[in-house]
Image (cartoon, rainbow, N blue to C red; front, side, top):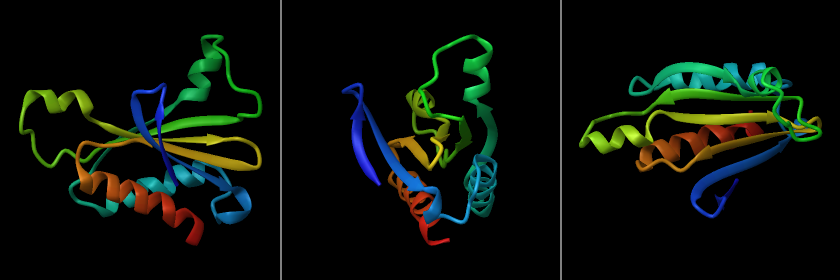
Length: 129
């Protein structure tokens, strides 16, 4: 898993996982995996799945060559609301893109370390499953 700045301002984590490195054969299987991890944690609330690929196709937007699916799993780790400003960085999402021979998993760094630790652990476990 790598960390970098997207567009020089968004701190993100990215994992590229060859399809041969994981038992999950599809984006739908990965969504089910993440939904199970979210359900396992009583402090995390699943919100939904956004099919970004279908949306972009529907509006005629450009899609990177080689990408065959792209979804966001949306959920919230909100343990507390210490200020109204925290709402600007919630909820969280994990993106999954199918690039043919590999999956690209990405998420933005959360302002709360337990959320980052959980999302990293969930994603790293995809290779050892």
